[in-house]
Length: 192
Length: 192
Image (cartoon, rainbow over all chains, first blue to last red; front, top):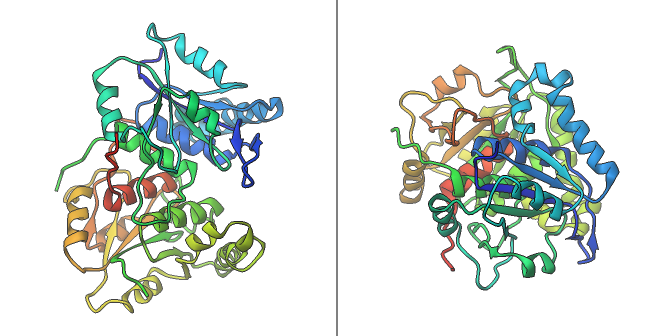
């Protein structure tokens, strides 16, 4: 059963490549592991891997399966628990439909990227909103050179980008996901 | 020139394996990329990759070199900037000596791990300390199943682990590094 009103979807299409062309990016093994582990650590119940490529979906299922049922399940049970929350879907619509089945309120789409956009919501404001309501949100993360402008235009909410310490801001999607989850769901340990 | 009083060292030895044996772990390509990108984004000037294996050091240099001077330098200049801060050393002592050469105050060693330990300092207290002093700190991150007890015993400061939302706490070293850097150096964007 899904209890958490936040889930993540990692999109491999539609995303830009380096030349601003819309492409389907390739699955990255460590995206699956890292984002599943971060999502599980911060209490999420679902992490969707979205790709229109049937071959790539099979690969994603095989990677999860190795750690859930294969040799890896006994070798590293912690990894199994993380990959248990992964769902592989061909489209964003299918991911939304799956997450929606657990909630009566309509799932809202949240997007984020490295560039600053007008009308964006800070992570701290969104964190408070997540805590205070039972509104379900699906947070989209883009691979390649990022989500297309159409994804941003269609979203219900745009999150402000993570701010570094200067003009350089090139986090991997794995690092950005970890930081966002910590900011949205993490707690402060104050033992000194 | 090094301006930032915080640097990271990723240790491949001495670390534990799954059976609590002290081993040298293998270099992971995406550790090098992700932690370099996160370090650069959050303003660090040095990220040390420490391994006693000469072959693995050559591999690390080759990975950096590909993006600094090779085909990758023109293909992705952002990646080059991140990998420019990487230094590959055979020992922690060598990493400390390199970082020390930029400072008059003695470099202090900070360690962190997933387990809660007594006498640990919270990330927020350490953040404030970093801002208020020019004391240089080298933050050690362990690969494999984590830094050995000897590393913790020899450290000047132990940081409290990142707190998830429940008993599950199994972040990758890449994700943990990103979250720690954000907590220690990140700023809050408040545009709504």
